[in-house]
Image 1: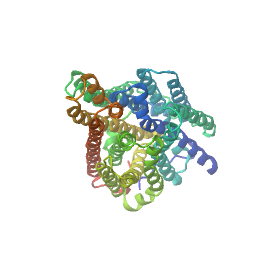
Image 2: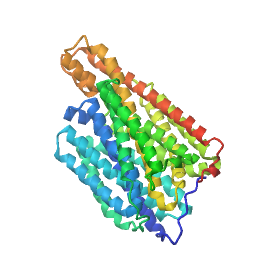
Image 3: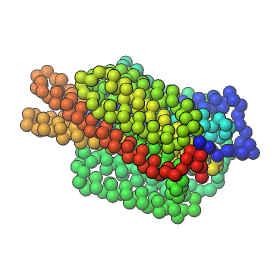
Image 4: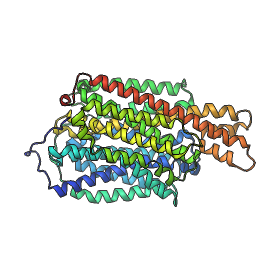
Length: 513
């Protein structure tokens, strides 16, 4: 089994068993706040679209602005945590996250909300790597794998907690209640950080700001190209320029890091089989999960006419599977080896997504329940050993960077999943519905329906509307969702094959630097 680096007793004093488990609970609360925020807005998306008259592209940005800064700043935040101490970064991140979330309650403009979401993502970037770094500091080596397993389970379960909480709130209140809940949860977590010991700073060296800026530019430009492609056209100069900038900034980032005396992320680390394979696994499984959330929750509410709470409850098998299997996966990992457990997980994810490509307006809940259960089980099997592999690659004094690398692959996968599957969905929906409305409706109304599924449902349900309009909207939605999920299956299969190829010749005992 992959073993995390041991931290000498001289470097730290391990808290007592009660206190360290309370610290694990506090770190779990922080994870629920930042992971749940991204997930909860997905169940609130139809309400946001109706209230703010947001297009499908604007919805993608409201969800993804958070993820772009979250993923882009994680490595920088991990390094800052190594320098100034993880507890300090945790408190700063929670303050930024909480205040920017509270500010959403005061604005009505879609653009302002997107900006505030980006600011909240910067706060979340400071929080997430510190949670895993603190866990690896306070738990002794013999308990660390179990704690990491709980952390992985909460990372997935936190998303479902966010969905369920948002669903319950939206039964009574508007979508802004989601932000009220997250502000309250952040305040409780801030108070509870008094339990966390203050670690000695690991480094007094300067932080690689240039590398951090390049990583943000690369992620932001890639997501811009994916999100705006269906709206502006894939051959649009803006979209082509965005993809070119993403490739250029990524290449410059690699070159910069190879030459920097204190790199944010040394690309040579990816020579380590466990680290490289783990990064591929986490990115692809996160892409599948968040991409499915974005389109699947809209399917449940728009096509199946589920209430927000019912839609969130429909995802419950995913959370149950993840939280049940995550703690026992380390045991199976030790018996069967890294590659075997990871492949089982990725196959489960692919089968789960494939099951849900057949969904229509007349489908029962059974294929939905089976699909999401397989998705959650697969994520549990794949994520825990991949997380351990990443953490094992760096020494204790760089656990902030190691946890940030784990988190950036997870969040980057989520951002790309929403952007990629969301864009495929938007493109497929627009192509399908345009054929149905182009000759029947005025140009302005046709454009509105092509731009927003929510607007199409409203128009199709209006008194006097053509009986075929709503049918066309729902048929186009089902086709688009199926196309997007098939793309997700392809990504997961490719990720599994790449992970196996990278790990070929290595056993679970070999996944150490």
